Image (cartoon, rainbow over all chains, first blue to last red; front, side, top):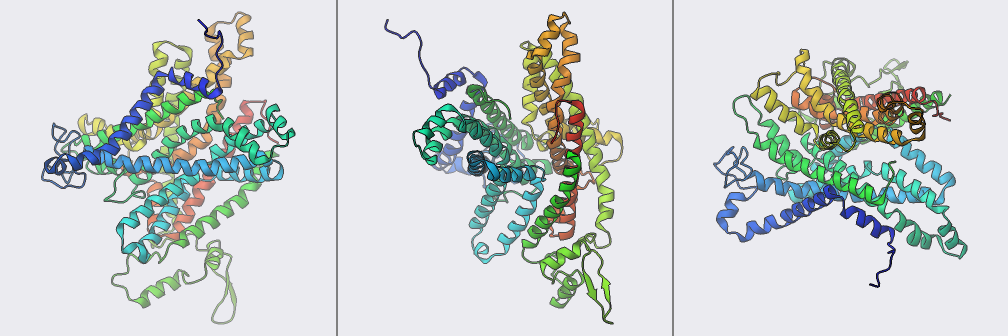
Amino acid sequence: MSEPTQQHFSPNQRAWRRFKNNRPAILSAWFLVILLIAIVAWPVILKIAGAHFDQLHNPNQLSDAQFSPPDAQHWFGTDVHGRDIFSRVLFGAQISLLVGVVGTLVSLVIGVLWGAIAGYIGGKTDDILMRIVDVLYSLPSIIFVIVLITTLGELLKQSHLVQNSPALASGLRVTLLFVGLGAVSWLTMARIVRGQVLSLRTRAFVEASRALGAKPHWILARHIIPNIFGIVITYLALTMPAIILYESFLSYLGLGVQPPMASWGTLISEGVSQINPIRIYWWLIVFPGGVLVTTLLALNFLGDGLRDAWDVKGK
Amino acid sequence: MYFVKRLAFSVPLLIFISALAFLLVHLAPGGPFDRERAPASPEIERNLMATYHLDEPVWKQYLRYFGLVWEKDAGGHWHHAPASFDVSYKYRNHRVSDIIAQGLPVSMTLGALSFGFALGVGLPLGFITAARRGRWEDYAGSFLAVLVVCVPGFVVAPVLILVFCIKLNWFPVALWESPLHMVLPMIALGLFFAGKIARLFREGMLTAMQSEFVTAARAKGLGENVLLLKHAVRTAILPVVSYSGPMLADLLTGSFVIENIFQIPGIGVFFINSSINSDYMMTVDLALLYALLLIGLNLIVDFSYTLLDPRVKYE
């Protein structure tokens, strides 16, 4: 037995070990992986499974089977046009998750740059940059996103470029969502990164590196960035559900993605518009809503798990 | 002194917000009369544009918004041009202030009820989960709190309607007339925040129970119940108070969706519609109103924080 009595782990390895023991977080990670696989695989399955199967499950295929409740053919039932809800939920997931991921990345880039610059340079620059963050915090950001999206959406609708190609138009609209939502979600990230950088800058190993003649970009790349990695990942996992929620909120109000594109928000809104006192079409709301809620839950557990693993203190 | 300074700072902030909103709405091509153009001739449209001064440069319209324009009339006399902030292009027989006077109390009532609901459910839930830490009450309650945070209002609301209005017939489906009408919207809007508050309060309680002053009190022989109720609660309430600022903002915007689903004649519907219809003045008015509410409420929250926690002193 030549096992060393004490093993040494890097902070990342220690975090990973703690994370692995967190059962809800691991379960959530598996759920998200399976959801991703389903999203990617489902269009392929539709292609190779033959015309009949495709006919039945194509998310844009209208049929006579209006409002059929969930059964062996339509696992989540069908909507007002006889479209398969299961397929629509999976295709809607593409948009919802895409907006979530890209919006989070936008907020990551702005937030980390802003916070790192403020924290590293310090002084007057820090004062000004963080003052701007404070001001933006006190603005009703979603109000501005709504105004921005409606006016720029109108701009898109009327430009010639877009009138010739509807695909481009809806693509640009989704891009607008990325940018708009990312642009209002970076504030917390900036504050946290700044705080971290500020405290790291004065730590002994950074001082030592500076004393040895390291240039700022080397210190940032070698010492600062690796050390804020954990906290950034954690806040990314917690920002993503917020952005997905915003997207579905806007799409619910008819301001997000436009038909024929669908996201979870538009699906739920279609379900709500079918509420009537005579017949209950619960599957129109329960399935898209259920998938949305489960995904948000999984992302939250994942974020909490990462936070515990890296022992990140709350803001 | 600090609060006087902040109050003074909010004036330029509001001017900045109005300018930003004004610029944003005027980015949109065409005017507010584009959609009703069909029968009107170009002359009529030009007339309409002239009546509402939409043919002027944006900066002049902006000054006119606040009533800061003086014009020469036919006789060569200077006279003050009326401020244009009260004009709605869409509801031409109404003034925006009338619409706000009608809708705002409804939205505020909904917000206040939901705020009360969130506190009334969230605080006890947080207390129980903290007091019974590690037992089944904790697990069940904590899971409930996380779950509720992941269920957006536009999923809760239709499910509540399906169950309590259509299936059980306990509550009316929509509108805003009697207290009975207010129950479901209050729950749908407040549930998310109840979960947030429960989580914050639990965390605060647990931190407080481990702090030194509680250990000291325990050493003196105080019972656990007294510790929880008299000592821990007082510090654990602080994170909840500082959260209530952003929470009030989210309550205001969250009510857009709830008002939409329950067809409540609040102000949110008007904001969304004015933004879609390029009803410029009304959009700017309402954005300003939301900003004003937000800034005011945040000030109140921060002020009450200093009253609750004597350690906090703002410079």
